[in-house]
Amino acid sequence: MPERNKIYFYYKKNNKLESIIQSLFKRTQQNNFTIVEEANDADIIVSIGGEGTFLQAVRKTGFRQDCLYTGITYAEEAGLYCDFNLENFDKMLYTIEHEELEIRRFPVINVEVNGNTLFHCLNEVSIRSTIIKTIVIDVFIDDKYFETFRGDGLVVATPTGSTGYNKSTNGAVIDPLLPCFQVSELASINNNRYRTLGSSFVLNQNRKLSLRILQDGNDYPIIGLDNEAYSIQNIKSINVRLSDKLIKTVKLKNNSFWDRVKRTFL
Image (cartoon, one colour):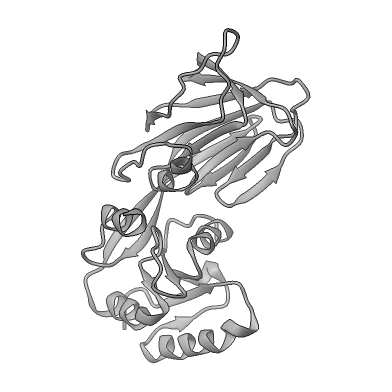
C-alpha cells in the first residue's frame, strides 16, 4: 500500500469522458488507491485535461501544501505542468506506488488587491484595460517609484508561468529553480510624457512589486489570475510578492523543465 493512497480526480464532466473516467477509477482501485469525493480528503490530486485544467485544479482546491498534484492530458500533447497522459496513466500509478518519487516544486506568487484581498497565482497575474483606452500604472519596487506605464496592461509571471502569456509578450523563459518573478509589458506607449523600460524585468524573491492604477476612467480593469478573469470594481493598487507556497507535483524521470520547454517550443 503506497504511503499516499487517497486520490481526488478533478475534471470537467461530460458524457464523452465518462466512460474513460470510469476505466481510470477502476484501474486506480485495482492499484490499491482509494478515490475520495472531497479534495480536502485527498493526499494526491489528479487533474484530467490540459494545462488549463491543471491550473483550475490547483486553484479550486486551495493551493494545498500537504498533498501532491499531478496532471493528465487526453493525448500525447506537450505539457509544462502535466507529465502524464491517458495512455500512460498506469505508469503514473506505478510510479507513485512502487518507485522513489521525484517531486517537482512550482513557485507561487501572492497578489494583494486594494490592500485587503489576497489571491495566489501559479502562472501569472495580468492587469488589462477593459475599455478602448490605455491604462496608466505607476510601478514601484520595494515602495520606491520606478516608472509610469501607459499601454494595454502588465503581466507578472512566475518562472513556470514565464512560458505562457509572458512568453507571448517577448518575456524571457525563466528556470523555475530561480526564486523570482517577471514583469512584462502589453503594448506600452513610449513618448516624451510616458517612458518605460520597454522590456521585461525580473525581481528576486525578496522584492515587492506595487502597481498603482491612475483613476482616469479606467477604474474597472480586468485582473487575470492564471486562467480566470476577475472584474473588481475601483482597483487602486496591486501588490505582488513571491509566496512561501510551493505546489508539489509528481515528476517523470528524465523530464526536466527544460526537456518540456524543448518538447513544447522547439
